Length: 395
Ligand SMILES: *Cc1c(COP(=O)(O)O)cnc(C)c1O
Image (cartoon, rainbow, N blue to C red; front, side, top):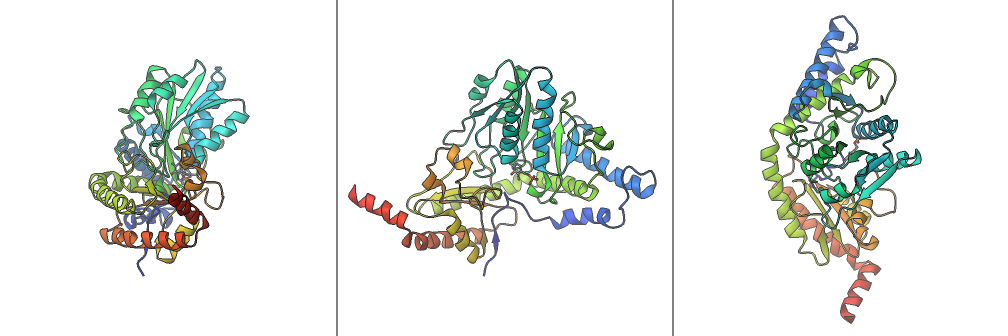
């Protein structure tokens, strides 16, 4: 049976080239980067080089604007809690975000609400795209931070980051973006796009799990998030994850240098797949068709449960998702699909496929063969589908 991994938005396979780069730091060069002898300073050098590489790949002015963390969730928590707690001392206690952020941002904002912050959650509309106008209108005298994700993890829609950055700049408000899904897939330049803080996570671009980074523009001062040693210029304590950091930099380098070609290839496959699947009756594509990540397809099929669809896909060798991996297991439909206006019963019948460079045209052919078969099979035993068809006949 064919095996197709189509859940690259949840995590990606570690690239063999990345593993090769990491290996010395998992074996022979095990020194602590803070130690002064040779295997310590060799590890330190590797971390420094990785920091420079990451800075140059996102257009940062200086490598000391890059802070390594344990991943996307930590970077989001630090950026948002750290900055807001710092600015609260100056009377700023209002945050602007959107309704369809990742839970690492939404739950962080909820936690700050419990600390007395006020949060405005702007709409994302049917196309899954924030209107910069809405951000502008939400700004108040006490706004500390705007945090808007670069690309959504479920429906892949890409946000007008540069415009939002400009609005924040004009109003002297700090702008953070969770770029975990976008980085390596779309061109990013923190200077040109007026981004003050940016979160990334290595395992979303073929790097290792448990390693991320936060870009913090010079002059932006979020509170220290982990107290302890002097690592990361005294702002994020803990012995560096040297192999992870080396892997993150290598993976990002590979992702950025192959981006153009991969984007062309994946966009073509994505559009062929969407066209094919839309031939299924009562199906729909979620989020804007064009302003989305090249490898993201998110669709709904009325009358079926997303979970049943995923199980049948798995039996046929296809790994897919019904939305965010963090929420599967719960029965509530995705907050992202609800935020773009889908009714509960339709949001339940959703499927996300997310591709990588490893995906082939043959994989797309196979998915185009299997999904319609499975949807028909499930609908044939669905009382909900029977009801939909009955209503159709009565109209
Ligand atoms: C995966 C993801 C995260 C969390 O990153 P981890 O490294 O798994 O903590 C945050 N935001 C978005 C948009 C993501 O896709």
